[in-house]
Image 1 (tube, helix red, strand yellow):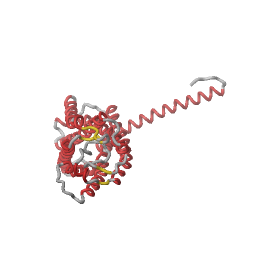
Image 2: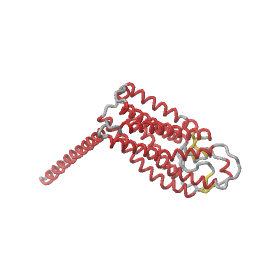
Image 3: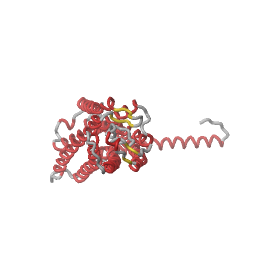
Image 4: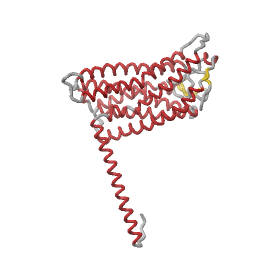
Length: 354
């Protein structure tokens, strides 16, 4: 569904809580802003882009889970983090088809679905962010102090870490159950400005904490690897770390800047007329569409950067592909023998049921 006018701080028809929408602002009820081009861009391009992201994310993260279950020890803290990251990215990915659907048709799925989709989506969002922070810290400790107990933690502590991660994520997402709903029979959003601001600033805090951890830990790791006594493969590792940091900031920094700027729309404002308000709003909406595409695509990049760049997982992937290829060859061989058997049976005048 294409929305041609707006009467709220954010009426891009994406029906999520950001995060994205909030209660109607009286200022915009007086000053109507035409945003046809922005909403048309979102309703056409977003579903296509997110369809690609969903396919890549499902393929990559499910593959990670299969490899971990088949070849790895899930009791180790490293594999526990990787497994949970794949699950959290899948939860996050599960919300994207609804996001694309809502761009085309508006929210027509009812209030229970609105609350459920928001909750699952936000749980995936926060658990992924928390896991990336913990994985970065764990990698830092492994490089700086490889003999530390946390590096080789297994069993109970891995389970405990998982329980804490998911408990914190569920707690952060819990307002979505109580304070979201379908407004004006069209928007799935927080019911008031307070919780809209809460959702935005929560994301901003998570991004700031992640950025501080990333910059500190990876800069220390890079300094350690640049020492003459470092391992020979330091060049490849440095490139990977640099790539991780650049991709993280390209994906999440613009999005967090834009939603922080949008948060000003939810604070009380004076009723004085601002002639450039509508133009600023249109630019902000367009920027949000672009930045959201970058940010939400991160869920399909995590398997590549955090798993398949490692030699061990590359070898596991080769084994898995060889196993599938071997099974396919066996099936083809069986079908081939059955076909030859059928031909021989027919030419000899026998009746066979295969």
